[in-house]
Length: 315
View 1 (cartoon, rainbow, N blue to C red):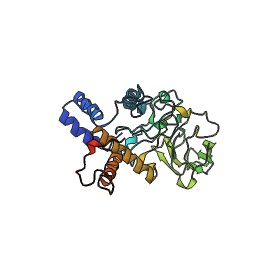
View 2: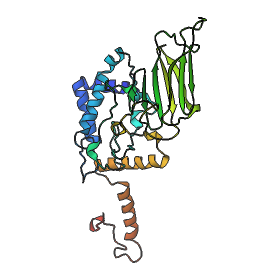
View 3: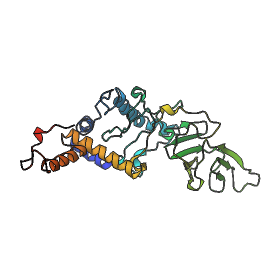
View 4: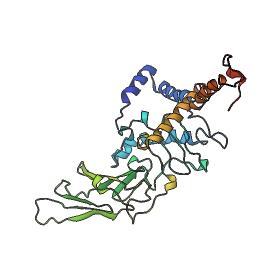
């Protein structure tokens, strides 16, 4: 559960002396540099709907508070902040029609307004165990757990205790439509026969050549799959109970966006920062440049006089 930002946080904590000051500094940063505390409504599109900011904070707190106890009962915790893209350069672009752009700890810029803003909820999964990151946007089943993003899936499958897992006792067969995993108790025993551990038909097609699997600690098989097309899955395999897609975190990382989308988001972020600082946005700067050209254009009543924006009115 390491983080690329631990040293930065430790430095801040040493300067602030205690946890109380550290948290005060963090939430003060959100107040000064983001619109985290702004509540959106029918007229104010920026910010979160009432109560959502508090729920985001509580969800994160509960996730890490329960991390140790979850590990003890056999559910390893995956720290998503260790992904190839750090939180400092990640945005989250909501794809669901009921969702909005929600950056984790950076400022929030709305890309597409909600039809029903009050329906926005933190992600949940159909499971008796809450706050398990291994089932993020997926589910915990009897002998396996799966999670997903818009583009890929990760599956953890438990290996029966009587099977001593190794490359010689585990066979994983993955096609674009199906998955089958077999195992046997021993390599040396002549009476050891292959038995099925897991099999099923995928809900949708995957890219077979991009599939990766490994044996972890001799207790479970970790599988990474890439979806053949961008979409949210209601189930990993066809016969599995479906999850409610209205309750998942329907997000897309900044690095997964097309270049033109990235440029637009960066422009929106810059404009929002300019508004917070009381400075002109990119559109206002362009308008100002156009007005300056028009001021001294041929036929202008202001030709030859010093430019004075105070006498001009524009939106």
